[in-house]
Structure formats: structure tokens, C-alpha cells
Length: 508
Image (tube, rainbow, N blue to C red; front, side, top):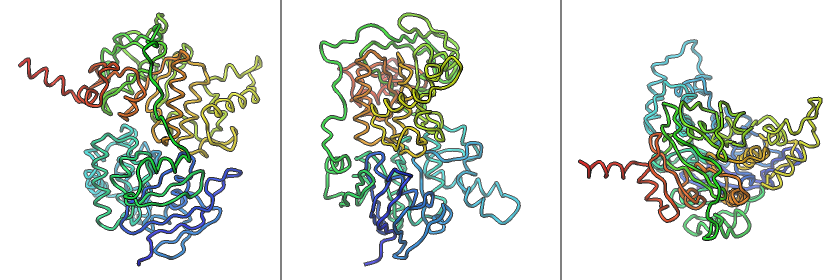
């Protein structure tokens, strides 16, 4: 039999006192799609960063085609035919899509002048396989979903033998995801080997040949996908049964009580128009709709991150003058961004500093000095409540896995004792065990009297977690669904305009 294209043996990686990987083994055969599963903090991304030359191992061996190699840098990995699409967006925002896609080639060029016409032509040809994105645009002007597609297109330009995809569909629409799946199958047919990291079991069982599970930085097992079930994989990931992903909703005797938040006819004149809804104590309100429908912009308009030109926001019946995010925080309205890396956390700062950053006034004495002991105590309390896996609250957030970074971002909002939390994709990139923990936390917060609004692109989350769902289409309210009406078909019809089109047909 031919040697595996990639073999990992005895891989260990320490970050100070934290053991991210311990004696891990992994093999990748030629032309296979191999899923790598595990909870956040299990070591998946650490291993991929070692394979891609981003990190260096403490111990262990990497073999390519059976030969030992040392991958000292991303450039060395690329020279071996290894490409990595990061879970977090890692693009240059002020460069164009084409420049980002061919960054490695630009750095290697020997001529003093760049042929931009050829660069843009080649980039557009690759991008057209994924989506109709103009490669002359700056990356900063693209939504998160399009930036994710640029990351994938960038990897496709490297002529890889091994392609690592770390949560590639986390920010994609269903249509974009299906296009990516088609490309993955084509790559596999051409002998390309793919490591596929995802928490979405349906994708794994549709695309992958084998699945390897890591837990707590250690190798657990490898199976053929055909020989296991999704429940088997989840049990091995978490080391326990996940009996309930979504907590119980409001029961018959728990109807929502007093009004917390009222949004009345707000518009920004561009991305959203005449948006009205209310939020009651004890309930979780979902906002659904297609990516680009204006969901995020509405949340930003409510909390002062985007100016609204008309309409009113009332909290406990009182009109609020929210002109900036600081005003929103002061009134008790906070926002969890969908862009964790860009605007959710400060990667270079410590866990404690991130959690306390919105609450510095309460932690500062009369002389204007920060009480470090109080800051650490606050951070330790929230880290414990959200089960953040860390070496200590003094560790930088960049040392955490993506899911644990998300928990820190949520803790930052909770640290100011908010009255309303607007959460944009709160469980993106989080494993099934951590998702269940976050869902229970949100329900507990709602029952404690905090108003919870959840924007989610994951239909099971929207329907399984929320008591009501407001659907947005093209920046306007398309409809609202109560407990009896909340089905996947009903949400899709409203989001895509099918009901509106039928109504127009009947009127004609």
C-alpha cells in the first residue's frame, strides 16, 4: 500500500503550563476527506497550525509521503503542498480580493512591477467557482460570508496536495456551502487530500470518508464514517451523553410578562426600514433571515453602532437617546458581534482585561486606578460560570481556542449586568457540548429577567432555542412566527419572499 500523504506521530504541544496536545497521532490518505472532531480546546486547530507551519511542536514527528519533514513556516508548508483555511478570517482588509488571493505569489515575484490585469483575471477565474464576487473590491468592504469565501479561494490558488478546512461553512449561506461541497468533491476526485474540521454532523456524514476524534488534547479514535453514527461521534467528543441540546422553552404557566424592550419603526434609510418589535421578560426572541437581509444592521442600529434616522427605542417604557454604543451600555443594552476576531475580543489582551473592559468604571477607585484583584476575581467568576478552558485569567485571549474566545466575548457582555443582550451568531464555531452550555445559559438569563435577542443562521438553533422568531427580508419585517407556527419551512418562506410572491400573484 502507498504511504499516507500525511502522518502525525506522537505530537505534543505546550503553551506554558497548558497542554494543548499530548502524544497525538493522525494519518491522512491520498484523495480522502478526513473529518477531525472534538470540543473547543480539544487541540484540533493547534494541530492544524503545526501542520501549516504556524506553530512549532514541543515534541513529535510529521511525515509527508513517508518522509520526515520540519515545517518551519507557512511558506514551508505551502512548498510541501499544504494549505490551511483558518476558522478566523486572516485577510488584509485594505488590500483587494485579488491581492489577498495571490499574496504568496506576490511575495515571491522577482519583477519590480505587478501585472494587475493578469492578477485580477486569474483571481476572478478562481473566485467564480465559489461566488460572483468582484476581485477588484477591497476585502474590508465585504460581509463576513464573502470574506470566508475569499479565504477558501485563496487556498485554491496554492495548488495544494493537502487542504485543511477549519470550520469553512461557519459564515456561509446554504447556497454558498453547497457550492463549496461540490468543489471539495471535485478536489477529492482529483486526488487532493482534505482535512475537514466541523461541528456540523450533517456535513461530516455527507462529505467525509473517515472521522478522527480528539478530546482534551488527546487522540481518541479514528473510524470510517460509514461505521459510526452522529451520536457515536458526539459521545466520543464530549466523553458523556448530550441529552438535551436545547433547554425547555417557556411552559404553559410561564407566559412572557412585562415588556422590557420596544423597538418602534426604526430605519437607517439604507439597510433597514420601519422595524418594530417588542421583547418581554422571560422570553428569547430570535431574528432570522438570509445573510445580507439586514439582521446585523438592525441590531447595530438599536445599540448605537449604526445611526438610525427615524424611530424609537424604549427600555422598560422609557425612550432612550442612544447615539453611540457607550450610551447603549449605560442604559443596559449590549451587543455580541458576529465578528469575534474583528470586534468581539482583544486578542492580545488577557482574559481578565477582555471580560472587564466594558465595566472599568466599577473596578476603578477614586484615584482612577484599576483594582487588579477585583478585575481578576470578576474574570474568574465569569470564566467559571461559562466553563472557559484556560491556564488562568492572565493568559492572552489569543491562546484560547475559538470556542473559548467566544465564551470570553459573552462574559464581557454579562460583566456589566445588562438588561438586554443582542447576540449575533452566539454559537458560531462552538462545539456541540459548548453550544448546549451556552443555550442553557441564555435560557437561565431570560428566566432571571434579562431580555435576550438571538440572531442565528442555524435553523435548528433558531427554532430550538427561541420562543418567537422575527424574520427579516431585504431590510424589512417579513413576518413573525409564534410557538405554533415556528417551522423551518415557515422561516424559509418568509426569508425568501415566497409568501409575498404568492400574495402578489393572487392579487394579480
